[in-house]
Length: 466
Image 1 (cartoon, one colour):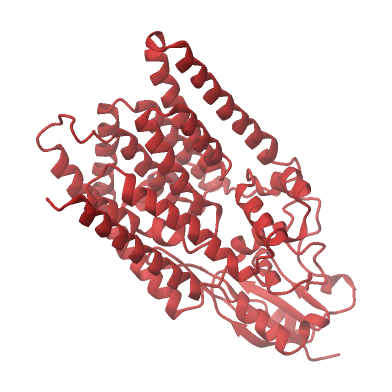
Image 2 (cartoon, rainbow, N blue to C red):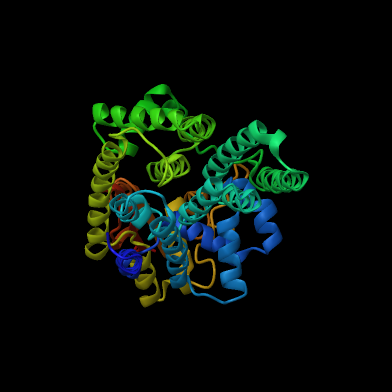
């Protein structure tokens, strides 16, 4: 057995490797539309309007947007700082996992370097960079029965996203049932602490409801045809590992383990709630990682104590299974890190460089569709003549971003057309009849796991026939 001091430095070395990999990838990363959208909302709106008006259209509790708002309006952070801010939260979450999780070290290390934890929710600056940090701290306090710190961690987690609120609610219910079983043995002081914790959690969920409740005129973002049991069947194996038979075995093993450890309510409510939200409300591939974070937190709160008696084969079988899962996910992370260095994640930055080089941002430009928001943060003003805001306001009452070209308005000199399916020529014939020809293409390839999910390529058209 190594001395504890050497084990600490081993953990610290793994954390340094993690931080280095994340920061190198961040240095090469070109933010895509979802990252830019939050930055632009935080940049251009007063804090109150952002939180209590625009978040109804983003269906978000607004914690990440608030962080970006303070970063810009208080600390005057540039756009390039956004991904480093996200990486800082991710590194803090990895530190909690590496130093405080109860799993054997090899499991902790592979979890930390796995795809969602070291790339998708670390390099890509989205609210989910906060999820492991809050979930890990909540698991630590849950195991230690530190009820007020647990409530604070759950309150913050609920403000990350709807996914965070689902996981926080599940852990809160689990803690409540555990407290109910032991209520008779609590002193009056302990009971007061539980009531304080309950108040903290209820206030946070009331804030989620007030801030994130969808507006009546919001544009629907869910795909109803995909909202089915079939999507659940496709999602689960993809999240865990891939092949259905192996994924099913590992999933049943996880559920069985959690049931054996008497953590049924957190397991059913968190995994069930996330799957329902992912399937029937809104779930893109990059949201699947919230289920992985939930699984880690569930294992965390359920894992036996070091001095606790367990079945003879429990530890070796569990370690082998978890190492197998997260070794594959670490392979996905390596592919993603290499992709960041070799390929542009989004063509937005290159598009902005071209527009600035030719002075196009001083004239009339039209931007088509949501992905074009990724170009806006590189300018200090709204460069699109056909956009009423620099971000996309997801309201049915806002004129669609189809441009004014076909409605008799003065034709712009440049038109930016994003492509999410790789077909950069799909608009050329229609625009050619209006006197526009492509003058520049900025490629972008948004990776998910080990393959390209969608492209965020921008084609710039210029009016050549007056």
